[in-house]
Length: 446
Image (cartoon, rainbow, N blue to C red; front, top):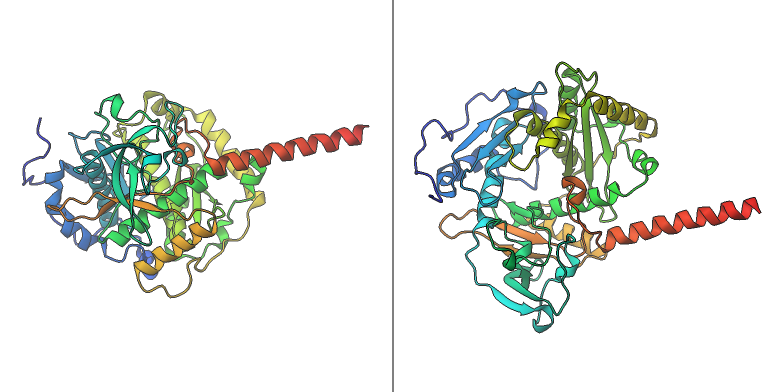
């Protein structure tokens, strides 16, 4: 079986974006995104000729399969060793197609890592990322004396070399169990590409911070979650407002929650559901996350990802979605229950905080990266490592970023992930509060 497709595939992967793109969200151009400084059309021109070499056979605009109209695209890579189908979203057709193609590119790089491996115990190494501080499942165990396969990465900030567990980086799911025995979460969390290495690292860091925030928010009591509801009437970001209008016009209710953690980088959860679920035309509820130094762009990312998530259920093409998950699309009673629960949280809604979280006037991606590192360090997470997965023959910067101590993507994926130190601390605080409440009630009864 071939690892790559022919160099030319006329009519399958578009050579250029159409001059008129009906999916464009006009107001999005009003607020530039410093984390993605290169226009998507320019990025597409760069990556388009390389897609066949990475096994991508098709990139398609699937926006029209839904009624919302927020651009969503899909990329197919049949010879994948992980996901064969990648999806992307954005404020324009170009941005969505680049997003889908880049996800496929990132996975292709992480599936075939051409780098030396070293088998050693963490205690034997001068500098290593602690595997026991990375997101883990119950399927293995690891400590400083466990033999581990290592890749060489670098510490983001000072560039010093650091050993990184291969199992936390590789997405080659054809590997024998003996090569990945530690039970580390093997997912694309923190895997990112970009036009430059700094852009890739910033994107990977934002994703890690986003998933950590979602994992912690998921552990909050329902009333505390409701207290993070955002009053959509106070949103003032042009791109976010236009996405909200598209949802409203399609008869879809969008509930926004500010899930920003103690790291302090704006993170948003968007949950969407039909205003009037129809048993004769069931459409799935969905959710999306967004994280960005600019709160407005965090909103846009969450709103767009929710539309993408809904189209995963509608298109039926994603190969990591189970039959049971597709069956739940037709559960109208569950959709009504979710809609009513989301409507109830509106009573807790608070004004949206506009403006920037990132200090005003960052001139480069390096400035944004330095700010993100400062935020992590202030939250007690000073160690940030990355592995360069860029292939010299292609030249598309791809990295895997890891921050030991951040929670994983279990809340998003439903995977059985063990609580990390931050989640364990939150759970312990909740247990302590419950015990205190019980003691208070006992004293009162006496």
